[in-house]
Length: 307
Image 1: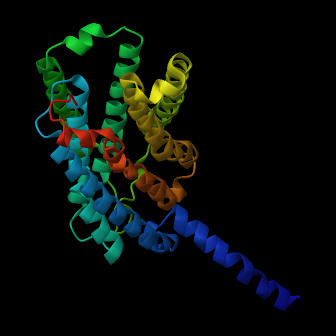
Image 2: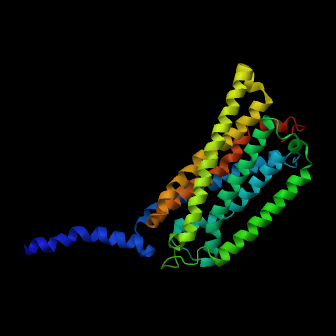
Image 3: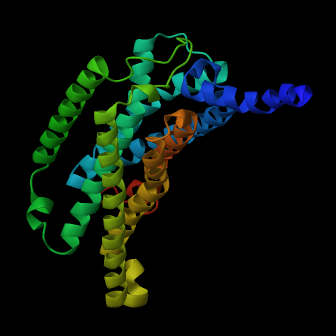
């Protein structure tokens, strides 16, 4: 019996150690290492493709900000630029598997990816809703309103975002980074009950809004097809609604998987490495500029066309 009793711990100790590592000491979490390479590849792809598509879009859009949609796209470009500026630091961390730039900068870089996701989502919603209202003839005033209003609204929104986010980062976000100062982006243990409820609400809102907009956008395309049939692809409204559809697809593909997983993750904080992988997938929305390049390339030949 003694040999059996002695061998029994050898079967339970590894799993017990792994559970302890996941729940108490992020520094000893061996699972983190297997995600470093994957995250480095993802962020390298996002940086290269995102920067390329952003550069092309800037060249095409130039100074044409004659519509509310154009100004929304400019805000989207600015949001992508802010995020892409922090991506090299993420690539450095996952390549070196060590963070040596201080907890303060880690908190900033970590928060920017969330800011980018929320701002991008908000801009997508504004663009889609604006085009839906214009399709149903409910936004004639919006279409003809001076662009100064849209510009002023953009400045106001960014000021609010920067002020609120700065306060959140300074006072509450990422105050502790686990037991190791050489690690970064591991703030799962900082999620308290209030923050957990807020995250539940945000994730549910993301999913609900995306599902509703998907249904409305599909219905608009159905109505356009029934009205014009085979000639619908030559209609200007159809082209605009297809671009809105591309934003809906980006929301579904990039954002929804993360927020569905996050509803589960909030009860299993030990999965913060996997949460980082799902979070990294949201950054592929930086490629959304490619969805605007179809007929937009005609602007090079027909500079009089509106954005």
